[in-house]
Structures are given as structure tokens and as C-alpha cells.
Amino acid sequence: MVNGEDVFQVPHPRPSLYLYFFQCWYVPHPKSIKLTCSVFCRLVRQSYQLVLTGSWTTSTFLLSNDPYNFTPLKIGLLGLLGLLGAMLAPLWGRLVDKIVPWSGQMLGSIMCLIAMVIALGAADINIAGVAIPLMLYDCGAQLFVVSNGYKVAGLYAKARARLNSCVILFMFMGQVSFSHK
Image (tube, rainbow, N blue to C red; front, side, top):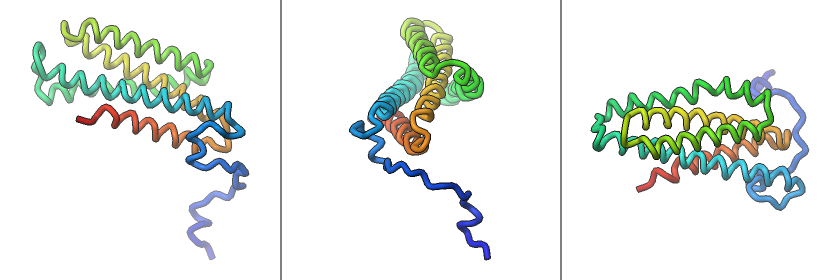
């Protein structure tokens, strides 16, 4: 007779690593060097999400006031520019597979920095000063996220899912930390 466990579970050996979810959060552990890198990746991922959420929120307020006075529909349609970063994820994944992960993180950071400089200098002048930085920041942040995920996944194979879940938790914390009143 076949029960539910036989249908939904693939037989595999249980990992012998006793590293629990909350132990992935702090550094004092025998694998402290790798987990220090994991903590750094989580904090940087949280800050990237914070800035990304802040840039989209700020651009919404900027476009609804003078000199643009866009309707909510036009602002929402401009939000479709964010799809560019998501559509480039496979391309960034192929690039990161060929290079060292920290260079992908550095290139993504440089793209985000260029986007911020363009936005600070030209956002009040022309709509391109809002649209181009949003696309460039999304592309740079996506490249950074792919490189960051590659780096975290390569830290310790037996704890890959737990480390990735901590990174995702910090990503959500970064997203909601800018959205308060």
C-alpha cells in the first residue's frame, strides 16, 4: 500500500548538519567564516531592497506633483519599466555563472550608483530622468541579487536552503522597512 509520504517525498539521506534556522542568524558557530559572509550578504540584500522600495515610492510622489502631474494610471504604467529587471534575470544568471560572484555584485552596485546619480541630477528636469534611473536601478539590483544568491548558495551545501531562507527574510524586512508612515 502506498501512503502520502511515499508519493510526495523523494528518498534521500538526511543531512548530518545540525545547524538550525535561528543558528544561521548569528556568527558564533564552527562555520563562522562562511556564516559571516552569509550575514553580510543578508544585510546588503536588505539595504538594496530598502533603497529599491524607496526609489519606487519616491518616484511615485515625484510623478504625481509638479512638473509632471501624472494620473495614477500613468504612474502605474511607468511601473511596468520594473519588468525589465525581472526579464534580464536569466541573462544575469548566465553572466554570473561565467564570472566571480563578487564582480557581479560590484557591477550591480555600480549600476545602482549610476542610476542614483542620474536620478538626483535629472529627475526634476525630464521624465527620462525618472524612467532611465528606475530601469537602470532595477537591472543593477537584479544583477546584485543573482550574484548574492549564487554566493550564498555556494557557502555551505548542506545548509543551502536555510541560508537562503534567511536571505529572503531579510529581503522582506528591507521591503517593508521603507513603507511605513
